[in-house]
Image (tube, rainbow, N blue to C red):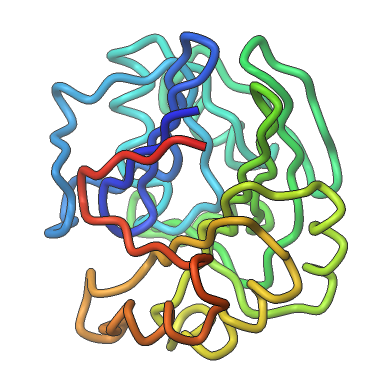
Length: 225
């Protein structure tokens, strides 16, 4: 699996000849290296309905004829926006896709999306455990620390992507506690430095982890797991 970080919480995964795109926040994201018109995806996974995660999902899904994976209310919303392919899930559910399996897990956060001047409920926030090519990747989405993360360790996580920005999500200290519960081989910080309220030094987070576990990914950088 090749995993590329595109700023904030936007991540691309190439596996089984398929491209997955997670939380494609491009428009208004000063940290990303992507632009909407040239972004490719076969599947788009959205952790929750906030604008910095749902982002440009509708436009990218339409131009690529991609399938959106998310909680059922969010999938219903994008379908009404003209997205033809979607796969709704819910917390605790697991499904086998052509590229591997996706399990939707809980995240402690809020959700809501402003559309036509009104706040629309787009289902509960979530994280994803993706299994493909014998590897497991955990995408936490936006979340606080919660003790049930210890259960996710049973999936033998190869790489975990955890928010560290604080204010809206876990900060570095709680994210380090989450990493200890998850026991992932590699832990990558996300969701920081996009806005002043979530400004962090990612290296300080890395220093809280066991040696060799943490990895700061630069925007556009790719790792293999």
